[in-house]
Image (cartoon, rainbow, N blue to C red; front, side):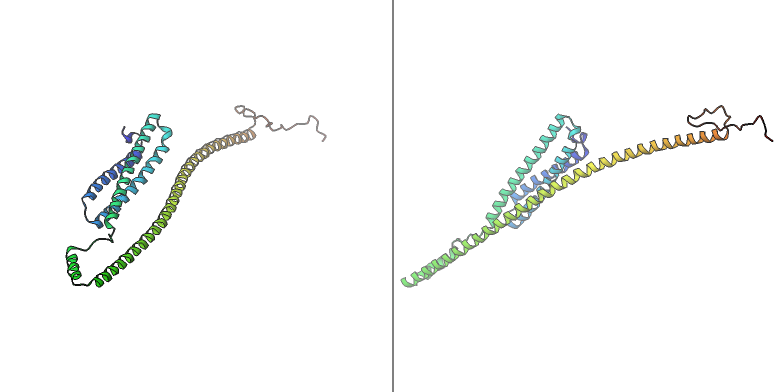
Length: 261
């Protein structure tokens, strides 16, 4: 089903998500061909930004679906729900692929502290050992063992510090994720409140317009009644105007049959 027949906003969001998925697919294919570690790291950062944008668009798609859910039939709502689930599934597949490449990248950057010497250096050591006495050989071996032990201790310390930093970073990321979730929920609530307020303002506007019409009609009626009263008072003998109930005609002047004068 064409999403534009349901909502233009849904169709636009779906098009943007499709473009991002296409860019992610091409980006990971390009990443597999890159050998340089620094270029791999930059490419992963770009792909991560695209996945963040895709996640934001999927949330926007879900909010739009919920807004128009009441106007759609059950089949359309089911189709939109399946569409959103397929988007989430595809995004999760790219997230897993990104984690895999991130692990491989970290392994490539890791320094091997126990690499043996190269061939030329080993040959020089053999020639040097042949000219040394047994005591010198033992002293040299003990010194090399001490240096190796020190290197191991330094490596353990680095690993311990790395674990502590990783733990603190994970805790900070968790707190930031929870804060972002709360912010998103608050934004959704604000968006819903704004929609409700807009609907309420429209209803109030319609009521005010209706009240104005009623007041205008009452004003015209009052003006008409006042005009009739004035005409009746000025010309009480006008038979074309019926007497208004409660308004008595003016009293006639009385003539006395007998004048005392």
